[in-house]
Length: 269
Length: 176
Image 1 (cartoon, each protein chain N blue to C red):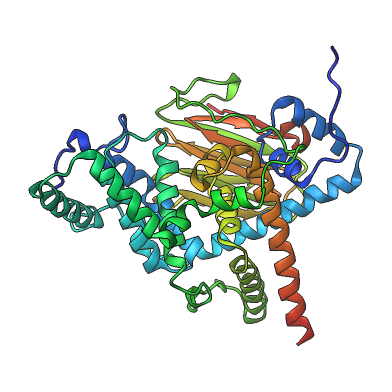
Image 2: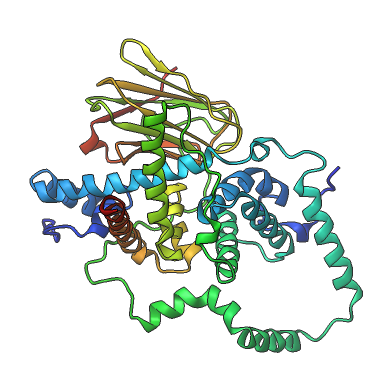
């Protein structure tokens, strides 16, 4: 049976899920087709992307104020030891205390949970509220892709990275002047990111130790983002103009929204 | 020197506590910093989160989501005792190296965005910041304790509320 598009005007939720590459392929195709003909929804996407970028910029501004000590590797006098000392002292107290039967512990925990209503409300509050207010997925809520299983990385097409190290290049064609590109990676150290136009180098920022992010304002129409990984990376994304154009997960890079962004992704030797 | 981990010290069956600490300390610090605007609080919450990870005896399916969920809950718990506005970082310097006029405009813009984010509900802010941290929707659902199907709705609503809050704040400023 031929597939019939079920979406007329996609909701904000659909559009956000589309921007984040979280829709199944079929729904993503529906939204993409709709966007190619609907100026109203196209503007809505731009609006949502602008709002997302404002949040991103605020996060970036805040990251820039973080204490420098956060970016230094753990030292012998680091909080690691402090945490371990606290934990060890707790365990020694716990193990030296007489043990109660498990069902008594469970019952006592239940009583404490009820008595400490304020504390428990902070944890279960959102779930309770969602029940009380009937806040639930509307009928037209987008179907979201299931969580990727935590499996061994498998290469995808020509953009697979070696689990140990790798490099990928994102070529952004027709990037409007003033567009912003954000490269975010959760890797720990020394990820080299080079940004250049087709003719000359734009900038050569380098991630700090720790999870990294580079935000660059584009001036050229064609920009090449070259990312080199000294080790396998676990997660990250490349965002251009508020739209996710590539995701990095489990040591591989997947293009996102490629059909609408015109982004070419390729590995380079 | 740190001792070798005992089996019960593992939050995950495949990753040691120290590996988790090394990998997720900074992302967690940044996430809590973005949530609370308070670097000292971010350090305290992160330390408490990893302490709870040491205490956790059962293996966890997704340690990253677990860590962020615990940190989020600690922040929520603390937020009841502390006014959010009191935690606005007064010494933020978003000016960078711009000229004075440009720096003032940038600082105003950053402050307005920040104030608008501060007026969001904790859950709205958490959803936006988790998304900003690169979490997939399934992980955001895990951290926030909601069904994955409502995550895009949460994010879209949070963005619209942020837009409304920002517009109202900017309107207040221009009318003064």
